[in-house]
Image (cartoon, rainbow, N blue to C red; front, side, top):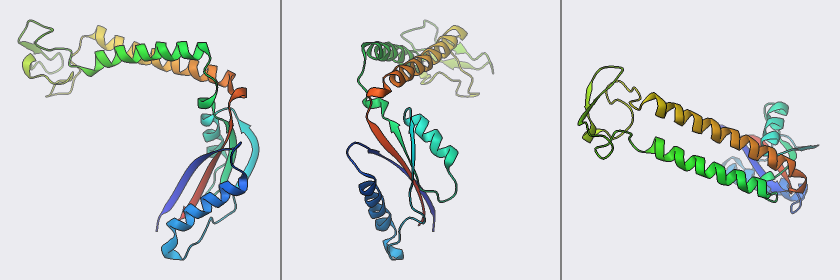
Amino acid sequence: MSHQVTTQCYDATKYSKDFIEADILEAVRAQMWEEGGGGLPYPIHWYTEICKDYDDAERFIKDHDHEYAQIAVRFHNTEEAPRTKRIQYLEKKQSVLNQVYQELDGKPYYRPDTVKAKFITCKACGSKLSVAHLKRNTCPLCGHDLRPESVQKRIVQLKEGYAALNEKIRAERLRESKNAPLYWYVKTEIHV
């Protein structure tokens, strides 16, 4: 016996409430076939509110949730909204930032082809480490980051820049949400 929470999204322009409920009941009965079928412990509560986007719908569900609640709310699927030139520009900028981040954070900073020294010293524990054998950016003995502070700061700046661009893209998509299709976010909870 276990407690199972499931969330699903359905295009509100293509699927009716009856279809969605039948689809969910079919899936629940398939999971509970050993116990003789079954269904949802309570009917789905279909809220009339329309959330701005998926994240907003997720927050709405969490705010209105209680044990074994079957909840559905509509939201604008901003992922399917028309991509404006501004969104395309921000996504391209974000892609470039991500590429720079991957180059800085992905490869070991100290490699035989980037430094002349055969050994480097860990600033935290004082260990002498062979550059030829370093496979990551942390000290294998104490776990301290071996990269210079300037590189570490640059990585933090790239992460912050990426997050800021994410917020700008989300804001642009929210502005365009009126052109986005409506979806149902359905949360069901059963005892299997």
